Every structure is written in structure tokens, then in C-alpha cells.
Length: 319
Figure: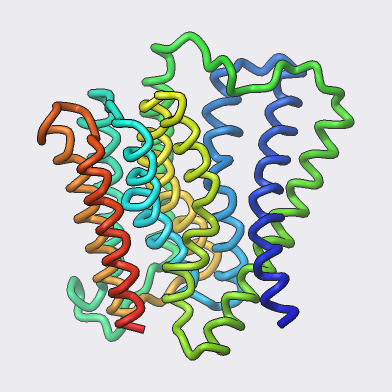
């Protein structure tokens, strides 16, 4: 019972730790006059992926490869089907041309590449499937290409007002936030992984199931909050861009780091989950050409939410 309590508290500490680290690091960088653009593209952009990263780091070291894989794939499914579904219900989301023709296809490339690298038995007749350290390096190289693209796009914009602190915070305060953030991420990540393993043993469920459902939803809470608030404020660019960017981060960066720490054996059933991400991404792309152009309408948001509900039912039936 105590493990379950720590599991729940772990999510709170993990997410709060990410907030503290991002706020402290951003304030410290601003204090030393680091350009807003650089801070926004590094510290702030990584912020919403820190929960997935730390959970996966502990899962990799614990040998829980199914949990690590489920966390990333499940988070990507949750991001599109649940988070964009909720945001689209709040307010119809208009989408930029660069998001439609560059970022969503890049997100699709990420999950397709994952599907290819996770199926060694199909490509070279291997006895089992594994994401090797070499695969992790490949992911990380693609991640660097994505960051180069992001920097190129960002040069066209002058600022990111309202996102960064003003830099007046004392350095000692900022360092304290960074330290607390790191401790929170470490403790939260450890408690979540321990709790997920305990829950899988307690209920006879697979670690993959726990990762795809409870853990994926918990680590996606920052994206949910960001996109829901953005939709409420009618800022669709942040709502959609946050989700698409997070999905790219999760595969190329989080899964890449995880595989480099320790190769991840992949279950054949993961192909179905990867397929769901591909279908969801394709549907997101198609919504920009159905009905009102470049707008995710409420009826399409309902389809996303129904898709998420159907996927949860499928996972329960699959066990």
C-alpha cells in the first residue's frame, strides 16, 4: 500500500520538479543575459519532456524495457488522441502551414523509424527485437536535425513574451529551484517506476500495460495543462505545436537516451501500439484538409477522444 502512495505522490513531485528546474534554469539564464530564444528552445522546450525522460532513465536502469517503451509510445498516443481531443473541444484549433507540412510529417517520420528499428526479425531475421545503443544514436542524430530545424524556424520570430521569467530573481534562489527540481525529478521518477512494477505484479498486468496507461497519462499531464490553457486562451499554435513537438522529443530524445543507456528488448505486441501512433498522426494530418482547412474542429476532436477511449478498451482486453 505504501508503494502505491509513493507512486501517486511520485507524479506530483515529478511534474513539480520539472517546473522548478525549468523556472530556475530559465531565470538563471536570463540573469546572465542569455538570449530569450536560446533559453526558450533549450530549457523551456525540454521542460514538458523531462517527466518522460526521468521515468525512462530509471526504467532502463531497472531493466523494465516494456515500461520504458510503453511510457513513450503511450505518451504519444495520449498527446494526440486525448490532449488534442480535449483542447479541440475547448476551442477549434487552427494550425500553421509549417506545422502541417513540416512538423507533423517529422513526427510521422519519428514513429515510422521507431517501427522499422523495433522490428529486427523482419529486416534481418534476428531471433528477437531490440532497440540497440546504435539505434539510440540514430534517434539522437535525428533529434539534432530537428533542433537545427527548430532554430531555423525560430529565427523568424522576435520574442516569446510571457513564457520566460524576467531575470530579476536572485541567482541563489534560481540555483535552489534547479537543485529541488533535480531532486524532485529523481525521486518522482524512481517512485513511479517502483510503483509501476509493483502494480503490474499486484494486478497481474504487464509492465507495458501500466506504461501505456497510468504512467503515460501521468507523464503527459504537463502537455495536457499547457495545451488546455492555450486552447482556453485561443492560442492554437501553442496547443498543437506543443503536442507535435513533444511527440518528436519523446521518440528521438527520450527513447534515444533510454536505448543508449541500456538496449531495450521490444515485444511483438508493441507493433500494434506503434501502429496506433501512426494512424493517429495520419488522422491529425488529414484533419487539416477535411471540413474547414487547417482547423481541428470540435467534431474531429470528438473522434480523437473516442479513439482514445477505444484504445483504452483494447488495452484492457489485451491485458
